[in-house]
Image 1 (tube, rainbow, N blue to C red):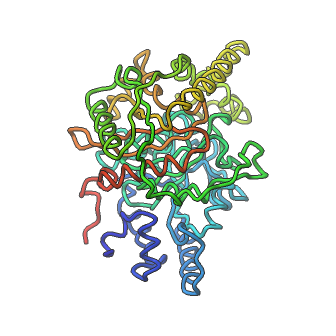
Image 2: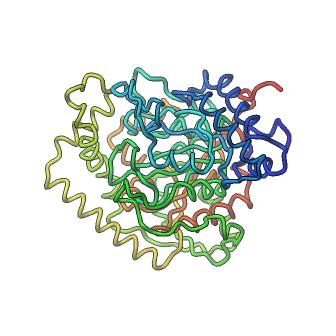
Image 3: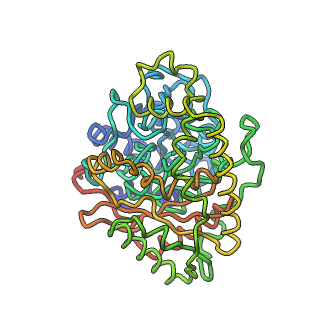
Length: 473
């Protein structure tokens, strides 16, 4: 691997370069810091860069490797952290000016686990306010590295941009209604949303506690599996974390998907998709079939529509709870979009909330029955390709706009299902489009294996943003 290839290496490729002496943690960390200094004034993916911490951790990793000590696949790997993960001594803003000066005194569990695995923290990544749908108006929004006029995805916008642009090798994201999957699709990277509870939420500031999923955003499915192996597991500090063994997500990586049953509901998928999204779905179906999977037409549960139609109301109640210490007492400091969500949540009646909750329980049961007949479910990330920011704003202004945007993501947060988002093609204008595979609870290993099979068969995940963003060599 040449020096010029290092910035876009995968985590597993970089680990191999370390083992053969073709690269070193200090060299690679300095490369990342140099690229951040050069490119991020334009891209705005980082809110806080931590060069002193990063280089100290890199020197430690390098010394350990020189002694023959290897902590695993993330040892010496520079990572970006979404700015809702508490970090000891480094500000954690939650994307809002309300917490502009918030400096935690401890690390959240996922950050602690990354450090124990030898990962290197480059800094804290920009995100939307409170992890909802819009960036705070007083804070800069990250720009899509493929084209600055296009949507970078929300809420893990900085995580998606930095990973795609070669400003980290992977990032932590969170997903409550699509916030790993939207930026993964928009930026042409891989995002893995684990089963709810598979990864501890301790020390991660919430949008909606019963919907929040924490997971990796990387350049490949294999990398996502390597990161999840570090992040997953029971945590005594988070009683909702699942007390289940953490498998080796890479153990069966090359087993392929021959005979795997992949379901698709054509009516659900194609009814409102634009032509470019439909084309990507067609090509994904074809590729998965060529790999030996059985594509099975199925019907989504009757309660699916209620999940995306009522997600915002349900989320709003939990968001109001999450912000009750500062809202309404400091309401004037909030941006208008998050304010609207909180106000809607504060106004929802108990009866209305419980009706949605009962529908949520029904959907979970119906989905489990569907998975008796299929192994994975194939769906888009959203129905509108890779829109410009202006096009998306216009869509969301329409009465059914938010419902359309959430159609393929929100239901699987309501059910707590694991999903993997994979790059699946490009628009005519050269912007990436992703698709997702959804699995049974705790079936992340199968999602990683299927994603890896698809990525060995295609090269969409190997495409990089426009050359103008690369530094001169």
